[in-house]
Amino acid sequence: MEAGIVGLPNVGKSTLFNALTSSVAAQSANYPFCTIEPNEGIVSVPDPRLTKITEYIVPQKVIPAALKLVDIAGIVKGASEGEGLGNKFLSHIRQVDAIMQVVRCFDDPDVTHVAGKVDPIADIDTIETELVLADMQTLENALPRAEKSARGGDKEAVLRVSAIKKCNAHLESEQPLRTLELPAPEANAISSYGLMTAKPILYVANVDENDLAGEHELVQKVREHAKKTGAVVACVCAKLEAEIAELDEGDRAEMLADVGLEEPSLNVIARETYRTLGLQSYFTAGEKEVRAWPVPIGATAPQAAGVIHSDFERGFIRAEIYNLADLEQYKSEKEIRAAGKLRVEGKSYVMQDGDICHFLFNV
Image (cartoon, rainbow, N blue to C red; front, side, top):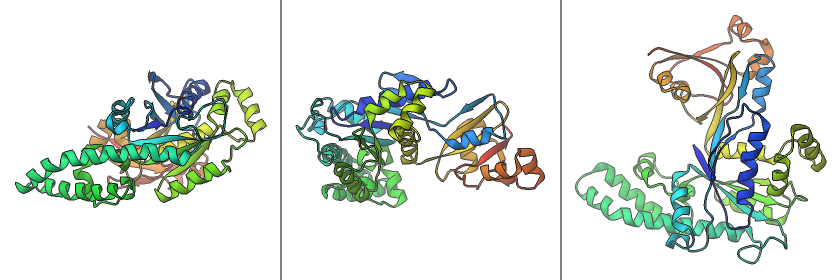
C-alpha cells in the first residue's frame, strides 16, 4: 500500500516528504526506512502500543508498521491535457492507493505562490479539476469497448457499462468519485481503471510555525471542504518539522517542548496517512522482535497471517490472540494463557486493531 504526495509548486510538498523520510532514518536503526528512488521512501508509523508491549515482552528489536510514500511530480493547470509534467503526474497518481495533498496555509513574501496568492481551496480545486477531467477521459475511452462486450452478453461488461455511466454523471456534477457509492459488483468491474478521484485523500495543511494547531481561517476553509468530500485534514509546519527531523533525540525533545508539541507533527501525518489507506495494525511479540504489521481493516485472520508470509495464509490452522489490556493485567503471555484469556480464532475471524497474535499453520 502506498500514498502519493501531491501539490502545486511552492506549497511545501517536497519539504514534507524529505522531513518524513529523514525523520524516520534518524529515529532508530530498527525502523524500516530506505530511499527506493529519489522520490520514494518507506516511512514508519509511530505507535505507542509497541513501547507498552516491550515493558512486558523485552525483544532484541522493535519494528513498527511502515508505508510507502511517493513524492509525485508537481502539477499545473492543464495537466489532464499534458501540460507541464501532467502525463507523468497522472500516471503516478493512478499507481498509488491514496493521495496526500499538501496545501499551503501560510503567508511568506519570500516564497512566491504559483497563482500569485495563497488560496488553499483554489489549490485543491486546481488538482481536483485535473483529476476529474482525466477520470472522465478514462471512462469515455473505456465505454465503447464495454458497451460492445455487453451487447455480446458479457455479464461483467454489463456491470461495467452501468458503473461507467454512473461515474461519468457524478464527475459531470464536478464531484470526485470518492463521494459516489457504487454497488460492490459495479465497483469491482471498473477497479482496474485506477480512477484517481475515487482514491481516499488526506489534506495536509502546511501552516506557519505560529499556527501549529491550525486555527487560521485558511485551515478552517480546508476543513470545511474536507468535511463535504469525506476527507481528513492534518496540520503540519513542514519547515519546522524539517528542522526538528535533523536534530538528535535530546535536542528534538527540547525543541518540541519549546514549540508546545508533545510529538513531531510528522508522527500524526504518518498515522493519518495509514488510516487514509484503510490500514490498521496487529502485533507479533517475542524475544526476537516486537513488530507491528499493517493489514486492511476488515481482513480475516488468514489474510493477516499472509502479510507475514504467503505460506502462513495458505496453511492457516488457527490464531491465538490477546490484546494489550490483557498483557497489562496479567503481565506476561504465560499468565494470560493460564488465566484462560488467550483466544483461539479460526479462518472467519476478522482482525481487530491492536490484536497480538500467534499464527499456527501447516504447509
